[in-house]
Structures are given as structure tokens and as C-alpha cells.
Amino acid sequence: MTDVRLDHRLVIVSNRLPVALRRDAQGRWEAEPGSGGLVTALAPVLRNRGGLWIGWPGVAQTEDMNLDGSLREAVRGSGFAFKPVPLTEVEVAGYYYGFANEILWPLFHDLQTRCNFDPGYWEVYRRVNRKFAKIVAAAIRDDDHIWVHDYHLMLVGNELHRLAIRQKIGYFLHIPFPPPDLFLKLPWRYEILNALLAYDIVGLQTHRDKRNFVQCVRSMRKDVAVRGKGRVVSAWVDHREVRIGNFPISIDFEEFSRKAGSFEVNRRVAEIRSDLGSDGRRQMLLLGVDRLDYTKGIPERLMALADALERFPDLRGRISLMQIVVPSRVNIPKYQDLKLDIERKVSEINGKYTRTDWLPIRYIFHSIDRTELVALYRSADIALITPLKDGMNLVAKEYCATHIDNDGVLILSEFAGAADQLHAHPLLVNPYDVREVAETINTACHMPPEEKRRRMKALRRIVRKSDIYWWVDAFLGTVFSHDLEAFSRIDEEVPHMAFPPRTGPHRPPL
Ligand code: GDG
Image: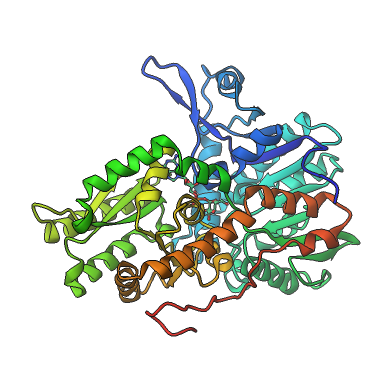
């Protein structure tokens, strides 16, 4: 297998750069690290091998802003170069808040009733994708590997072809791909599908996403033949091959494991645990970590916790949920409503159950630094990860990577992409089923140490084996290698199923 990772410069194109600009107290522009799953996943890859990252720096452009100058400082020491894409306020409103976040995001997460199919958004989306393509075309060299990311930039490949860029272009979708009956609701379904077929590869997270995409291609483009089986299949579009594959994104497993065993994290874990009480009477820590988003199922999770406290009174005083919510898209009214809903539920539950010696929920609405995050992962007896739908969910994998003592229980939504890959080793739940989640919390609290160990060992083995470097190799190999067979054989150790069987005591297998 040729080492496609290192022979060529890698050019990443994504909506956001891995740094965000903001004004400091003196009104000067400064760059701070970006957040979110895409950045966590890709930053170590580019740090490791260098390259160029093209994206929007997160604020609408103003006249006093010297984008290149403000970013120069952030680039120093990062190991790779940035090329900012300046966007005006109107562009940010139509392309990002509008088309991406009011149409594609809810529709692709099966939440069609939250969509606002405003036709004006489409025009701006197209214009901004064209703008990205022009900046990419001006920045690339002939032998670069171009890799476009996510739902904001579905049209960039097609626009690059119009600009006579002939090299291969890879595309990866970080969110789920919907089944045909939902995708067909999109007024611009043909334009989007055809634009995706302009890439040389369309990478998706799970088998289910790939199946949905292939079904859309089959039902909407009768002239396109899709052939093959396994991780990667080929669609033949006007005699041109488009590869379609599923590549579950991952994390830098070794980095998270190493950090979990570091002196500073061990010290914080001891502090956090001592705050939870002394050994015999220590409360069990449940942890939720999510961006503020309605897809993450936070209110539903809080209702399940309340149900657990109501129906299993012995849990009162014994468990405590730490819920971290990272601010995200806070300018959108629906996200402000969600924040209020979460805060009302936290306060109702705490108001009902708090005792002088026990607080059921600790709620944090800001992001925390990596050391604190890893210390919380490691301290948490149970991770409660219950999105209504999620492309992958890296928090689930990070939780496993940091449990270096093979303790800890992962409760995971069956609608997170991670469930497709982690099989039956987590306790799988339907996040809409409040009763079931409550029972599963109770089951996790009483799980024998040997079972915890067995499950966590299996989870860590899977995440270690298919880490972020595996993911990059598998994806780039599929785009740029001639030996497709070799890359089709790359696979995780467990077979995939549309619905992984549940083996927990809480439910019979499906
Ligand atoms: C999208 C898809 C897909 C969270 N809080 C803090 C913090 N984080 C980091 C976590 C994790 C990342 O943010 C969140 O990643 P997720 O994968 O859970 O979710 P999305 O942001 O929605 O990501 C998702 C992903 O893209 C990758 O393809 O898995 O399905 O929706 O890495 O560690 N980091 C720090 N402080 C925090 O408070 N430092």
C-alpha cells in the first residue's frame, strides 16, 4: 500500500478553521482554538503531517479586520497553514445560519419539522460555495490532495470542476445522511445529489448512512449504476467512477489515553472524587458532554434522570449528573429556547430532590479545558450519551479512551453513529424512551465490576484499533490509491448491523 498520507500536501476545506477570531478586551482581534467534533478529529492529523486548512474564521468580516494578519499568530506552532475565507454578514446569515443550520442540519438528523425551506437561503449557499471554490482553486498546487468536509460545502467539488480543477477531490459528511423519503423533501435534492456525485469519493460515517445515500442515488439517478459490496462501492456517473464508502471518524486514542494517565489528570481525578464523598459513601458520577443542540437529546436525558430518581429511590443521594453544555449557535432563537428548556428542567429536578448533602445535577454552560475534560471523563462512573441522532459522537469514544483502568459504563443512544461500530458493548438505549433510559441508568449503577471491565476492554480495543490515523489512511487511500481492493479490506473487527443487538439485562435483544 503506498503511503498516501505523506507523499502529498493535504488541503482540508471546511466551514470553520480550527481557530475562531474574537475581540479581546482592548477591541483587538485575537484567535482562540475552535471547538466541535470536526476540529478535534482533524487538528491532530494536520499537526502530524502538515498541510493547509481553508475555512471561515467564525466571524463576519468587518472593514477593520485584517484576516491574514490576525491569523498569523495562531498559525505559529500549529504545524500547518491557514487560508481564511472571508464571509460578510449577509453570507453568514444565508449560508451558515440559514441553509446549513435551518435546512440541512435538521433534515439530515431526521427532524424535518424543524426545517425552514426558505428559497432565499439556497442562492446564498450556492454563492458561498462558489466563493470557497475560488479560494481553494487559487491556493492549491497540482499534486495536492484536496479534502472537502461536511454539509456546509456540498457544492464545492462541482464548483472546482467549473473552474477547470481536474485533480481528485474527496468529500466527507460528518452528519448522518437521511433515507430517501426524507431527502426527497429537500427542494434542491437534485442539485445537491448531483453535486455530491461530482466528487471522486463521498465518505459517510456509518453503513446506514452509506445505504441511505446509495438508495437516494438509485431512486433519483436511474442512469447511474452502483456496483460492489463491502466498505466501498462504486457509482458510475457518465463513465466516471465515484467511490462511496463508510469511514467511522475517530479520535487520537493514544493521546487521550496518555493524557488520562498524566500527573495533572490524576490529581484532578482525586479532587473530583473526594468532592463526591469518601469511599464507602461516594456518589456515582454520571457525565453528559454536548454542544448546545436539539439533536443531542439533553432535555430527554434530564427527564430520564428524573424518572430514574422517582422510580428507583435508592439512587437518591447515590448518583450525581454533571452535565456540560458547550455554547453553540447561540444567536439562533431555537437554540436560546433549548437553553432555557434545559435550565428549567435542571432547576426543577434540583428543586425537587436536592438535600443538604446532595445535589442531583451539576450544570455547566461553558466549555472547559482539555485537562479538566479528560479528568471528568476518567472520574465518571457512567457516561450518558443519548443523542436523538448523531453522525458519530466523539465524546463516546473519548470516554472509552480515557478509561485506562477499564472501569466506567457507557450508556449510548442507538441513533449515534458510534453505536454502529461499538456494537453491543455499550448499554444501548432509545433516547426517546425515557423509561428505558431510566432503567438503564439503574442497571449501570448496579453493574458488577467484572462486567464493566469486560465491556470497557472491548470498547477500548475497537477505538484503539480504528483511531483517527486509521480513518485518515482509510479515506485518503480510497480516494487516491489505485488499489481500491486493499482499502476495501480495511475493516473494524466487529460486523456491522443496522440495529446492533442489545444484550443488557434491561431489554431482550431486538
Ligand atoms: C460533529 C457531528 C461527529 C466538547 N465539550 C468540550 C470539548 N468538546 C469536544 C469533545 C469532542 C467534540 O467537542 C464534540 O464532538 P462530537 O462528535 O460529540 O459532536 P459535534 O460537535 O456535533 O460533531 C458528530 C463529529 O462532527 C465528527 O465527525 O462525531 O456526530 O455532529 O471532541 O471533546 N472540548 C473541550 N472543552 C469542552 O468543554 N476542550
